[in-house]
Image 1 (cartoon, rainbow, N blue to C red):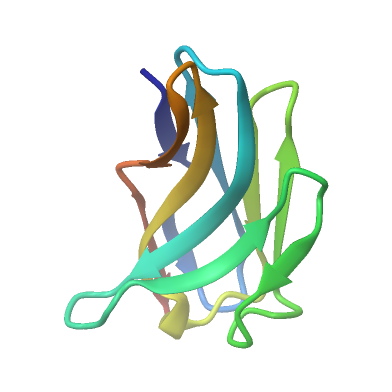
Image 2: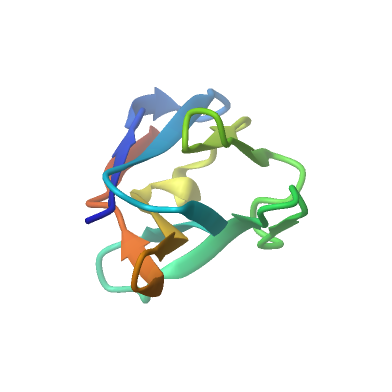
Length: 119
């Protein structure tokens, strides 16, 4: 059973930076696309960024130019470097990955890590 565990959240002032990590563990063959989402109370979950297995990246307009998604396949980990943070970036950030197991492709979510940006 594959699992995703996020880390790196915290409290930061506006203009600051944080780096989130999401590591996959367990039994699987390979990891496909990986993505970051965030959710604020009272709002729907918002897609933030995605990276394919070949390294192609896409970003939500709200974070373009400030956030960078990357992956280290040797460590089964996806990262989200967040710079010039704004209070509107506050939320619970979670990662999603398509993971190939012996029974086929599966979608997995992490438990989330909280990011709070103070003004």
